[in-house]
Image 1 (tube, rainbow, N blue to C red):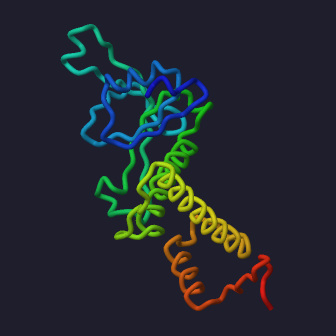
Image 2: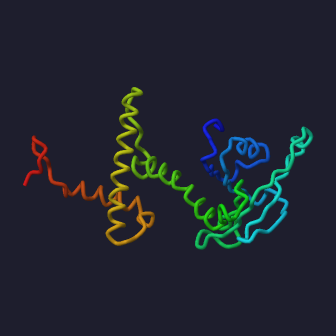
Image 3: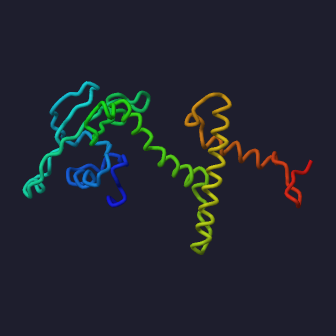
Length: 208
């Protein structure tokens, strides 16, 4: 996977992937890293920076240290999200580490906001697999080409739903992320069942 990375990229990752060896491997790809780490990961603080982030050491495991692996300097960014979970649970607290060590190049607040966008891809997959396709519906095609056709069909429908959400948000000056995908799909389905869309004649024109 590291062969797909380059110095123009910033790689985001959730907790559960972090470790000295894997961090070192991905760092050598040239890409910058911004990963969430759990409270069980020990980071030895070195210096507090002006934006509230800190420099710390990510120590090598005992096994790696025996082969000469050295501690890696990382930048630690910690923050809480209001309304996500109780303040005393890890669900509301985020601890990120990054290879971007200079706060002038990448302020802590900017990186914290950016990390939240990582969930967009998971939300998209959930929309496709659960809310749009339905929990009990399966891809019915029996050949690779037809499976691709069916998958592209789902993607096109998803794009259309998202476009409707965008238009609705822009009409009221709101953020599209604040509009429910599930609610939008339900509204569209109700409209289709009620026959609210005008049928097309044989030439493709809307019948009056």
